[in-house]
Length: 78
Image (cartoon, rainbow, N blue to C red; front, side):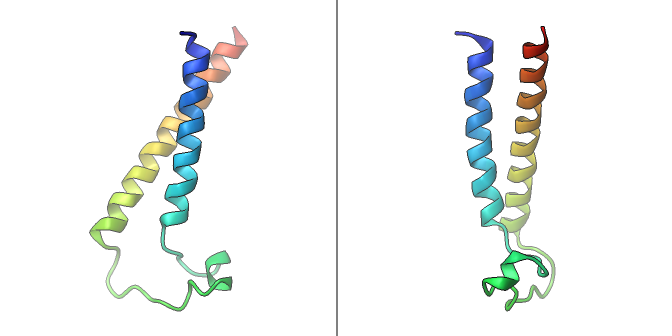
């Protein structure tokens, strides 16, 4: 298989996963989440274990997404 095709498919999957992970996060207030009623709840002592794991998955997916973009850019340049 072509490396460009593999990176493109990986980029597409990482993009979709990134969208889903960002939408799963709790609203921090002051943004669009307040407009839809997300600002009503308050956190009383930091984030839960699930929220921290969700943060880790989101950052990991972002790193994969960024690496795919850089790799595709380098492949297209040469």
